[in-house]
Length: 317
Ligand SMILES: NC(=O)c1ccc[n+]([C@@H]2O[C@H](COP(=O)([O-])OP(=O)(O)OC[C@H]3O[C@@H](n4cnc5c(N)ncnc54)[C@H](OP(=O)(O)O)[C@@H]3O)[C@@H](O)[C@H]2O)c1
Image (tube, rainbow, N blue to C red; front, side):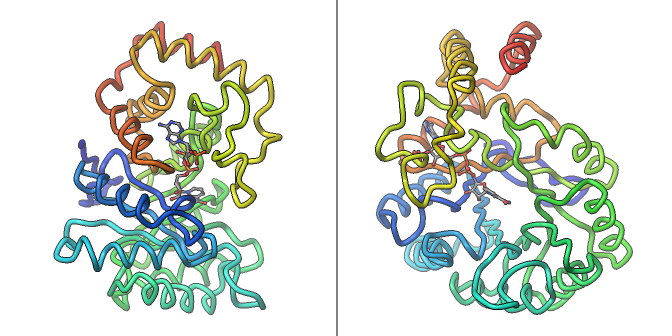
């Protein structure tokens, strides 16, 4: 595994991290979840990405991860970077959603309890909340670090101008933002417009989520929608309507290029992100050990010729 320094910090993250958004809840196989976590760690994936609401039911991914930690990874805490987040709907009423100090403080306490951890390595504001002053959300994050409940803080899905404001507030209080997390893949290029340059300027790392567009950038949907796929599951966030014939046309062309490179499409789509120096780490999500093994192979060839890069752009245009 290659480890990249996260922005201008001294923290190194594996170029591939494992996310527990889907596939690690109580609706999923605990045995498969355990085997994926352990295989990841054995192969140098030191970073595991959680959030309060991951499941389903919400909270169960943290509880299950905590069980694996106690049972299988005791004694390895100092080799692990574990993140969690608060920002999306977690519980009913006015204090279980958004960016208020009340919600963020209550949520990190609940997340620590569920995982059994004494602290998170990284704690995120999961989304920008326009109804809460950004100063309030940032102060809660700063205080979390000062209270020893997290070592570093990050933000996710902030509009560019709000990310700048957040970075300025955090810098002024000597708790610099470690990392910015956003959706980024061959199919979703938004962070290239402004966030990458802003992160570079402020020395903030960038971690990409949904690098395979929730499975669209794999061979999963080339011939329809399989029964056990995310798009088919009622609790899956990927909608069948997102898998249009236009998307599949592009994915098929990318799949042909991947075959020429001797890779699966999943490997090539991840490799394309790994070759980007502005990306600190890529958070994958897998539903089986076979997928995890396949994705780890992306590291073996993340070089692209100019012709290949141009062809990819033409396919995606
Ligand atoms: N900050 C945020 O707001 C936010 C939002 C979303 C995600 N995230 C983080 O990012 C992580 C990853 O997101 P994601 O799960 O959407 O990532 P992803 O890698 O784009 O999608 C994962 C899905 O792709 C399919 N897949 C993965 N490897 C495959 C392979 N080799 N061959 C065929 N299919 C493959 C699987 O689908 P099937 O289940 O159909 O098998 C898997 O569940 C999350 O767990 C979470 O930690 C953060």
